[in-house]
Length: 191
Image 1 (cartoon, one colour):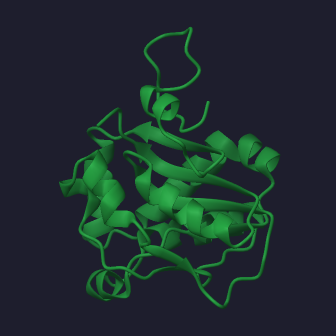
Image 2 (tube, helix red, strand yellow; image 1 turned 135 degrees about the vertical axis):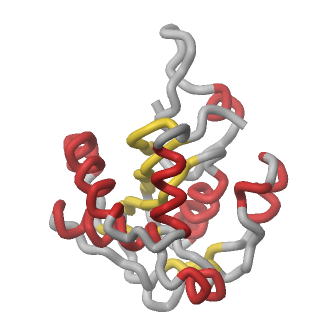
């Protein structure tokens, strides 16, 4: 009901993580579980300049979740930012590609200037849950370009523990955003 992870018991509404962790976002959805062949496809999109994959992923997100996105009624779509050093090395932000495609398809403005990753963090994939949380503490900041809005839709490629999206949502809520939702391509099934 919150992060969108599959649950093992029909009697439960929340996964173990959501039952035991306070999240700063309201709700989110992911297209697929993060396992083969999805994880290899995202790896190509993220690290091997397969930017065209972003259009397919965005089309699938809209096809599967348009009703929920309309219900959330976000004022703006914000891609989870990369640190400028990582963006310079990679040449692009995969979350921004998704956000821009989604914005065009849904006629929702995209804002890639209002949220910045001010701290150069270690890659999350190499860290455990508590290390991820510590790694992202104060990693995001709202910039002077931010114009207050009530509802934000954050976009990223992968949801593992939710720490990245929580850190970004927390920064936005500290500046007055009331509700933060998210969309990702894939979601992990535990940590």
